[in-house]
Length: 344
Image (cartoon, rainbow, N blue to C red; front, side):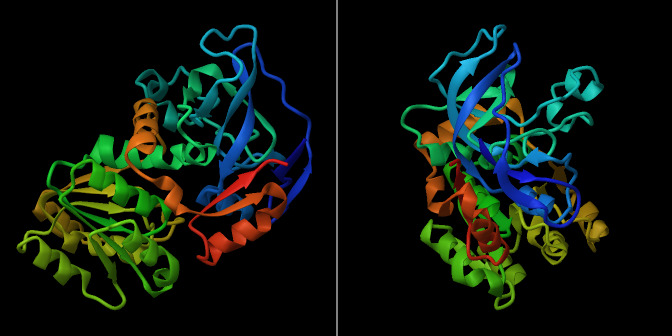
């Protein structure tokens, strides 16, 4: 089968090449991939900025249909439409696994960087990580479940959106725009999203199109003043950073209210952040750091996508894996939001 492979360590070294079709182990299912989204992690792997074990088939945001099950599989049968959590090779023995936190087990190796992933015709996954998707859901919507589940786990389950919250989202990329949609359907009174001049052409334009209440270009407007005016001087109930930009993160202490909540989703790429720690202490804020998804976030996400949020509005490019370079470049130059690749 043709697959998009990171062939060796270093900058670049990605190519579409023939790879053996995988075979399921006794506790695994073989999935025919129907659609797979490009994640920021894939871009980081291309640039040698994220851990990976080459040669490895890239891609982890996939949807597909089961075509074969291993002899020990009891929960699934051929023909079922599925998505999968990426938490493969968690050890099951450490205190994190035993306390239900397999997503941050130090032994974990997810598809796309730790094991073979979804930019191919077939992928195998353990049966305990699979979730069904309804017949009413498109394959493209299914490919959006994994990134949306991150938002659900981080913002809805941990930091929580309370009824009538004023929510600020830092960063209008696919995760930030998804967070804005999720905040609204979960009861936020108003949502404000921030971006820069570079975001105007596509990202901030899309934010306006999907109905975000307040869209602020921080290079043209004073976001602190706007937030205070909209909240009677209190500040935001919840600030969610989806940007990973040190300058954006540094703004957060001035935007959040006393006894407010801060949710970190974006990674900085190991860049240093200047943060007014004393201001946060004096505001007695709750600060939530996050990584990956929980089991419960997946079924909740599937329901949200199927019934309440239109994630397909964030898909700007649909390409075969043979045109992966076009998709990756569009993401890096901010000409794309979400890129979906299809097997050939």
